[in-house]
Length: 252
Image (tube, rainbow, N blue to C red; front, side, top):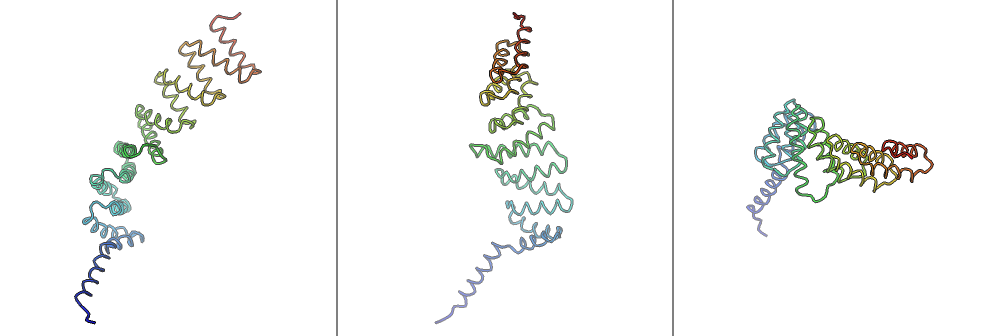
């Protein structure tokens, strides 16, 4: 059997080249130095790989990690912004950018990054999941912190739509409606909450307060009577009905 040295050479060359492609030496050394905390050396090797694979999220992430570790967060941001242009639909890039902008106190860009994440997630998903909810909560808190109350309310409405049973969403959104004098929205929301939980006295009291504020005597009386039905022997509720008649000058 005749051995073809040329075929053997081609075979081993293919193995070596494939290994170099699948497991680049520079990337492996970068990982090693990064694991040892030798960030400057890791940076050198990851930079070499990134020059060849400019759209690689994994390498860009490692580079950014190195720059942050040596106290150069703006360099990390520059790398991630480059990746953002090449991978506009990759929300992971925006998560990292949001965190980095927060670290340098650039809150406008941080807010824009998180808004971008939410837009990407909602574009490709029909229903909200845990990751969407987390991003929305972050956006809500950022908007509140920046006193951007219009977008804050918008994010809160989406959270409430997704999870109407959450008391924190209910109470905060109700405060928004009342503060903005959005009586119709507040009333609609309270009616839906009372329908969902007829024994919830807190929301019935909110409806009574809303009725007093808007002069809706029918709503006021109906909610007091509903409370009495729930607790017929409660003297405080009976007195609320008496107060209603006094206020309406209908005391008999």
